[in-house]
Structure formats: C-alpha cells, structure tokens
Length: 462
View 1 (spheres, helix red, strand yellow):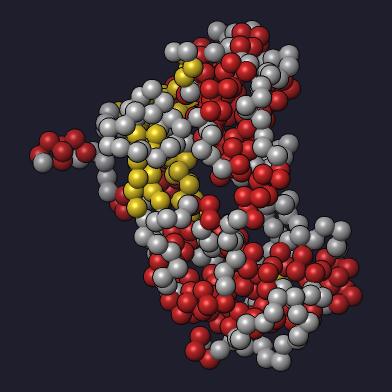
View 2: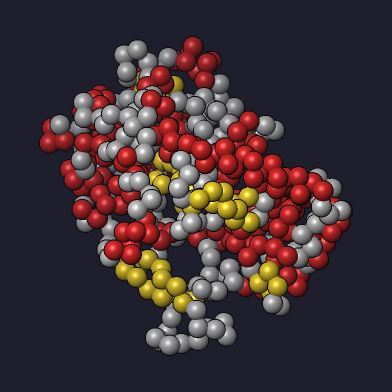
C-alpha cells in the first residue's frame, strides 16, 4: 500500500485542480513518469510529473516545434507517404474544422469518432505488418478483405459508417495530392445497400408506448422529468438537451427558437407545454452551481456543475465521450422496470463472436474480450432517450405534418418566417397539446382526426 501511495502521490485530487487548469490539460494524458500527448501518429512525452501543471502546455509548445521541424525536413514524397503520416495530416485537418468551422463545421464528437475508426484501421495487422506502416499506394483488395471480415459481426449501419469514414480519408488523400487515385476497395469492403439498413431498423423498437411513458414520468427525478417534458414538447435528443442555453427561450419562457445543430442550423420553433415548463422550473430551482463560468449559460448540468455532454482525453489521445443524459436515462429505465440488468460475456477480439467454451479458439487465436449485454436483447434494439424523438413523431395526428416538421427541424421547403407570419404559433401549440394528451390520457388510435378538449396531463403527474 505504501508503494502505491508513493507512486501516485504526485497527482493532485481531481476536485483540488481548478477548472481553468483542467481545461488546458485536456489534450494531455497522465502516465507514471509525467505527461504525454498523441501527436503525429505517436505518443509524445511532454514533461515530468514534478512539473507545475500550468507549465505543461509551455513544455509541449517547445517539443512540438522541434517535432514539426524534423518532420518538415524529412517529409517523404507524396507517393511514398505511409498511412501513419497521412493520418497525422488528416487529423490536423479535422482539428482545424472543429476550431474554425471551415470549410465546413465539424463537431468535436464527430471528429473523435472519425479518429477512433481510422486509428483502429491503422492498427490492424495483415501478413505480419500494421496498416500504419504501409504506403498509401500499397492498399488494395488484399488489405481491405481481411479487415472487412473482422467487421462481419457489426450491424449494417455500423459497418457502413466505418466504410464511409475510411473512404472519406482516402478521398482527402486524393484531393491533397498524396495519391493519384483512391484504392480499389474490392468486393468485401463496400457499403451495404440501404435496404439492408432499413430492414434492420424496421425490426427495432424505437418508440415508447403510453404505459412506458407513464412509468418513466412517475419514476423520474426532477432533472429527468424536465428532460422528458422538453422531449415531448420539442422532440429533443441527447445533444439538444446538452446544448440548451437560456438565451434560446422567449421572454415569457414558453417558446424555444432552437436551431437544429445536426442539419446546418435549420430553423426550429418549439412551444413548451405548461407542464413541461413547470417541470423545468422545478429543476432550475435546484440547478447545481456551474463549475466554471463558461458553463453558466447551459440549462442542464451534472451534479458537479459540468456539461452533461463533454469529452476528456483517453489513453490513445482520443477523447472519451461522456453522455450524462444517456447514463441517467439508462438508470431510469432500470428503475422503471423497462430495461434488463447488464451481463458480461466473452467475445472474440477479432470477429466479435461469442465464446462457446472457456478455452475455445477462434480466428486461429485465443483472444477474448469482455462485452456488456442486456439479457437476451441486443444493444441496437434498445429504447434510449433519443427514442422520445421518434415517439413524438408517432404521436403526431394527421393534419399537423408542417407543424411536426417545424418542431423537429425537418422543415425542407417550409419557410419558418412565412409560416409564423401566416399562422403564428397557434397550430404549433395545439400539436404539442395533442401529443401530451395522447401520452397521459386514454390511448387513441394513431392517425385519428380527433382533437383535444384538454391541455393538461393527469393530476397525478403534478
């Protein structure tokens, strides 16, 4: 025990480090000897553990300048560049898009996902060599075929995302002049047809039923009930909740001018149901104090005053995405009896198949890794917080198609300014009332033309 304490005594407790210093240390990863950072395809040692935390970025600036000078003097011709070197340039371009939003904005989470898939691609070994050490011109069907076989257990959507990420990287290499043409991906490493993706989605349950919504509302705590009210009023998902700020509300607090972040700031107008506003006010009365002044405009915070969605550096230099909304919603569904307890199984580290026996061999090796499952169900069929967005669409009655698109951010050819000038927000508010009545009253046939006569849910939810 004494050795353990002596080994880690240099690291201050997490709560004792000011938020300002935590932000400047986000790109760095602590290790036994000090601080490291992932740069140009390698883990770089920055400074010792005795260095003052505020001086770690200054040490890295000097080391980075030396590394860039060496690379500039020994950079290979474009035709001989390795995958490792090309990925370093591509990652810098992704970081540039995140910071400056040009030529097209990119979210931090999306950039981290791209880096994660490409890092796994570079670490794959074929014929005793890692892809990271191969020349860009040396990629062909012989390399993509074994890599595609390791992804056979992935869902069509996940496999299509990986193929699109890798193909996007090679398209970047072609535009930058690193290769004359994109490689031949072969017959294995191709995107699955859209019908296959659609058929799998049709098998998934993505919408909550009325009984489930009742159980959620009665079991949820103050913050979770505020999330539920906003989701049933404006079809919000995890990212919408995480990035909701006070300046988006109207002066009376009953209307949200919320541009959908995913689709290039599409206009989106959300009227709040009175009960949703009441649930939100109940949360604001106990809202934690922000851990940093930069978070003061966020409506929802964790109990420690941090954003409910954020990233922190991992061991490989890639950010680990933290989704507090998804975590709390998972716990809520378990308390409400709508989700089974997780179990741990062993799967092959290469192909992902379940281990049939304790010492079984798969893919000519005995490498098994742990994987969390939810009883007899598989992960993609689960209903999460984002399922409330699908629930809102399913509860929308006929005759409110334009209003549904305006609230969900699927405006298309609908102009928000013209709609508000012509109709105001009366029909939008009526749609929200219809959805709430279909949620917390007797079930109605979906698609019926019946209109609401009340505008408040059951008294037991007050």
